[in-house]
Image 1 (spheres, rainbow, N blue to C red):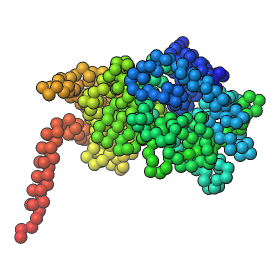
Image 2 (cartoon, one colour):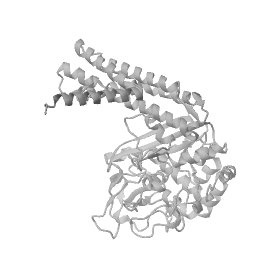
Image 3 (cartoon, rainbow, N blue to C red):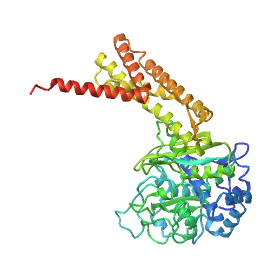
Image 4 (cartoon, one colour):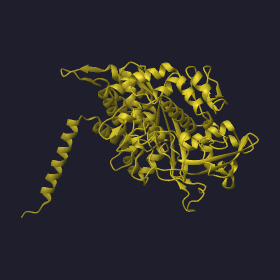
Length: 517
């Protein structure tokens, strides 16, 4: 794996080719990126390479050390790989790369048996074109992907374990929005994601014992509940046990069993640096929701939410002027329902890095997103909503099915996609510094954004009911729409006054209905 080509990269002229591990670190400052057959494989390869860098450099301990690593340009990583050369042999007779030699061929299955089911095509389908076998390069990528991103569910029973003990948990990368900071070259991307690593300061996690990657330690027995010894151990944690069997230079049979898992009360949050959390739960990507609607989760730490820790580290690097003025986040997610894959996302999001370094600015952005989310109620079907008013006069029955059929919401979000990019660029320039020395944002842009959101909601709803020929129903729906828009654009003080007035009116009504004593 050090000398043979197997890692899929994008070259300077935007061609995809496979290169070896040594060649990657020799040329990473000219390469564009990693590009696997699918997003889960790409994510897994990045995390694998980060584990190598952390282990080779035992850092970066701080910003100065990060600069030293940047200047070293991969030489120590190459020396480390050569030191452990025999552990990066996919078919080594004693310790094949990231495989468990306790798994024998007698429990193996053909590649066809493992990967022909419908669920397999979410990950990879090239085997259909290669007589149900894998090239060694494909097998290496697949091995790393399964160790990092894999569905839960039934696996082959590990030898010597209970026959009922064959259900595996999904790794934490599944059903999480996994963030990679993108650079202009592969070298920049990897180093931007090279989290501060200082075990003496318990950053990014506590280290117990030796913090070693799986290829140095082996597996040490049957799958079990275990706690990673540190961040490097976590990046290469054996969520699965695997073994590859080859014939004629191609992998024809494989074994995949459950691997280690975290104890029930141990959260991956203490090690995970590329995931945002809300209420101690990972932020997920929706297959039907625009990425920017979660932008604040990736940029802001506030109250019960915490942006990815790699973004915190990026802010530290920016304080030393080590990164550019625009941050680009590559965000990937595999959505699954237990053992059923629902689909993946692989989206990119760019913003001025000021959102990373200025919490006040990021907070205003969060308010802007909240305004857009609040207007989503225009397209719901509750009593008093525009669609409810429409369905009521049409005698349609269930207002929810009518709202779903007319689907004004998709038009609404589609319009805001373009407007949000303009807001993202304009907000940092809309600032005033007060007497307290604090710079605040959004004096002009936030009200303008509210108007944009209202116009988008009005247009989307009106277009959605254009085919309705009952003009009385349309008129009632549009009147209700305008009432709702007025409620939504009211100031906090106006909303409070209206609420107090309604409460007083209700109290008066109750008093009038009470019989005289």
